[in-house]
Length: 401
Ligand SMILES: Nc1ncnc2c1ncn2[C@@H]1O[C@H](COP(=O)(O)OP(=O)(O)OP(=O)(O)O)[C@@H](O)[C@H]1O
Ligand SMILES: [Mg+2]
Image (tube, rainbow, N blue to C red):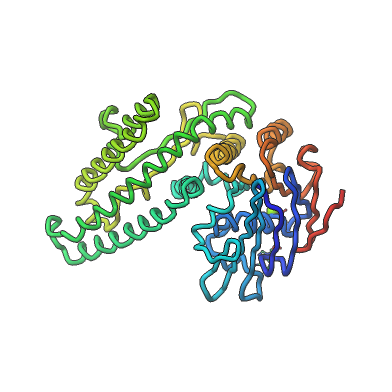
């Protein structure tokens, strides 16, 4: 798919902007602070109702304005969709697809994109929460229905935590907490569904990450990703007890057997989940937090057998983060009924050496549309820089080539 038109009203430093776009590579150039990132941020926002830079939407509305609008027209083959989001300071945001109201969390159904930006270094260096967010964004892009599961799961964790707090305050004995059991079942069933979705995703990403890392870094280093699960046995447990034993077996099975094996594995996870909750109930009551579940899991990133976090160099961490994003684009491309995701590279080329720039250009060259921002056009390999759009102080200066 590709974006054919973007229109902004009171978004960031844009009072009003109209940008027509072609498939292929498009380079947005302009000096620092002119609005290049703001523009691609708006495009990404239309596919997720989330910014890659800020968690609150208030900064997205132009200062002094009460609301802003992002309107995006995307096309896949002959089919076009117009997505419109209204951002409001003092009312909930609203979205439409082809003039029909849709929920914000439904947006990934209409527009698929992958953005890579300097902030993504935190995928490697940051807390597990950053990696969980990365996984869940992709989980929802692959299976939009799971947005609801994730939202419900998060609500259950919150409610369960407040119940644990009440229980701690009232010093109820652990075996008299029948309400907690009810929440446990909700936690286990939603949590298991999320774990399964993340696990399938990680299986799909793993070979792509390793390939993309080699492609970007230009040397053969083993980049391997895996899920670390709190429902799994502690490190000292017997390896055969891993909940993934079933999944790994199923990969070798015939297609008919796979679904069944995943089914078994889900049951297996649910069982482990319950028994780990029982094991940790005392600790959960002491601390008044839910200690077991996908909200505490992590995506482990290894490079040559060592954890990337804490070991990888700056350049290696960059390559790793980039490999995760390129792998995401490949996975979405393979899954998607709407074709390639739009690949967005924000301020990436300035950070890379010559060899990495060329290799990145190779890696993204085959996608239907690649949107690039750079302060210095010369940093971007020529084959990606043929179509340029200049940006100056929130104004679009078309075609300065
Ligand atoms: N809500 C807002 N209202 C008005 N202006 C804003 C708002 N949010 C950000 N800006 C302005 O937008 C500018 C930053 O734009 P942006 O991040 O897109 O720059 P850029 O062109 O990507 O620059 P760089 O090359 O440094 O990455 C800043 O001047 C900032 O003050
Ligand atoms: Mg920028």
